[in-house]
Length: 297
Image 1 (cartoon, rainbow, N blue to C red):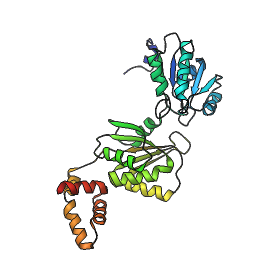
Image 2 (image 1 turned 90 degrees about the vertical axis):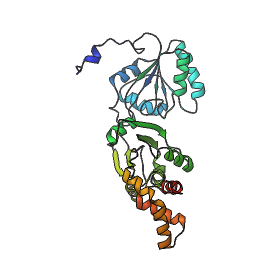
Image 3 (image 1 turned 30 degrees about the vertical axis):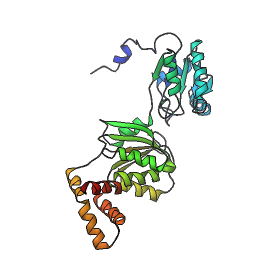
Image 4 (image 1 turned 60 degrees about the vertical axis):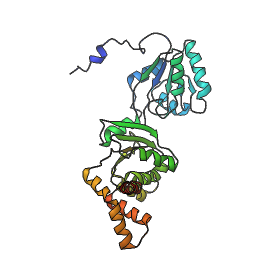
């Protein structure tokens, strides 16, 4: 086991220690202002300029730690022109720190264009790691972390969102997304419809903030809880467990056609209504039940 001072005692040969102007990618707190590293604070104090997603938001952090530094806006609406301007500044000798409103710049936030432009111009790009909402949510979720996929924000449109969920139906890994609070119930309805009532889901809300909350359980249960709660506020990370398609469940799916015919006969309902009942009984989505029905023909 390495001693606590092992890393500190090692010589630093990375681009972060080399002299000359650089582009620093500085992670900032995602809620709690204490979640910033000593290295990040040092870099913010030493650079010539800080490029911010929102200068007003970043100024709260800088003021809290007594950092007096010139800032400039860098966001999705001006990154096309501002990225080129910042690279010119670096080539003239300036060191620049890029920060987002919260977390690591470039992760579901502006930054990619500036980073790739810096690399093309042979400007050293130095990551200063720190807080990340999806990683914090993942490790505290209780879902498997040995294999996972982070896909940013879910599509806002119903059709595209369902299509994405269809693609992870049999996923062998934990899926991690960001979602807007006003769309959460609608999204969970799609999760239940596409992935089934029993899919393991974790909703992490306001991670590291005062009202931090983790809702863990089956998709159907969590959907009902959300509907009872009403308005949902705060930043949301949605985590979906990997497929639990057991032999028993597979056998149950194979009987979809027989069960469908029985319900249609006994209850005198059409195929659509019967299919919905079958899906509910088996704890799978209606679309999944329909696919099994097609396979059995």
